[in-house]
Image 1 (cartoon, helix red, strand yellow):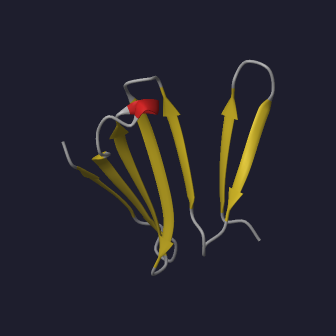
Image 2 (tube, helix red, strand yellow):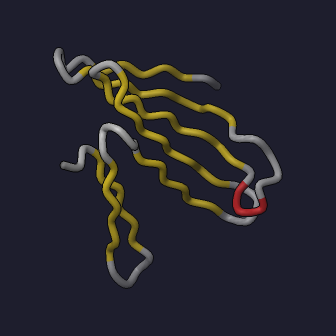
Length: 84
């Protein structure tokens, strides 16, 4: 069964993709020179989201980690770490 769900809307119709605890899910949104990547993984009972700034579609730079958001499934505790 899927654990993660990603969606996109381009003005016409919504589309979605599913990710499992074993695979995670990665999404991107780009211009030619700037973009955002969100990667989510399930590790040791926690959903860990990492948000990166990227060089966009041309891939001119390595991704820069902006923030990490963690949800512990057992306790419900949420934590946010900023990496700016």
